[in-house]
Length: 330
Image 1 (spheres, rainbow, N blue to C red):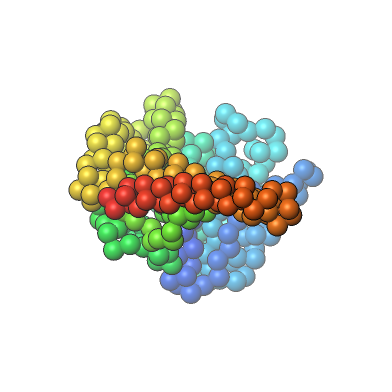
Image 2 (image 1 turned 30 degrees about the vertical axis):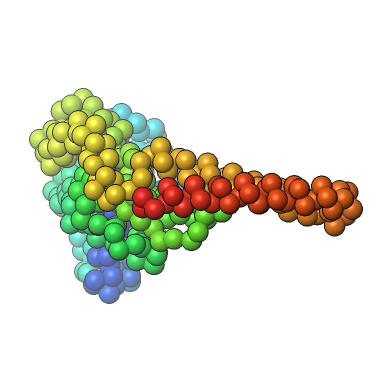
């Protein structure tokens, strides 16, 4: 049996699914809700049924997601029912050795909460740390989440990967989603349709901090408290590395601004001006439509109508000229 541990959003579940996919075998994805019952003894029966079903369908991959919720430390968290469930899991795990072709994988964000008995010989003897994606992986994740989106040729995926060290895969997806929203929001406010540009990604990175900060702080605290730094050495080394990345936050902000200048992109102040002008343009267009309706409904006479329309159209042209002047800096 193999335990995958590491920060959230970094691909533990994906690795388990990919294992089954590569082997072309059934994949049983088990969560605590598939096991837990309020009725006494039913949780243990559910667990036995799950193991039995996986063994009968072998070769197969049996995957327990968030296993710390199933087999929490009996010496700290265990109530009577939780202790019985941990004991039942250990019994099933010992019995699975007789099964042929069954691979058991489990994942957790909190390995320090797992009962130590799971690490004994014949159980989860193999523990693999799944770290945040490295530079090459981050670049591929950016490409993966933008492959169906209209991307400008000025988007530099290698540079984006450099700027997102210490980010989870889920953070990068959030950055891609946010970058796609920016031109869409501009279009809704009256702007022209355009592709997603490097500037949009840079802005999204500024807005999206790494979600792993809180997890790494908690991990360091728990490992020191439990004295398990040696058991989870790779994790402890990753904590030290992440601290260095976090200390570069201000430097990264400066790099983001430098990248914008290299691309000849408008400053943040200029971008805010464009947004305000687009909003103003939409309001003028709305007032023109209201004035036309009032004229059709004979609420205003032709002279007043002509005067108002002329004034609105003049303001509309002036606003559009200002927008185009700022956009040329793109």
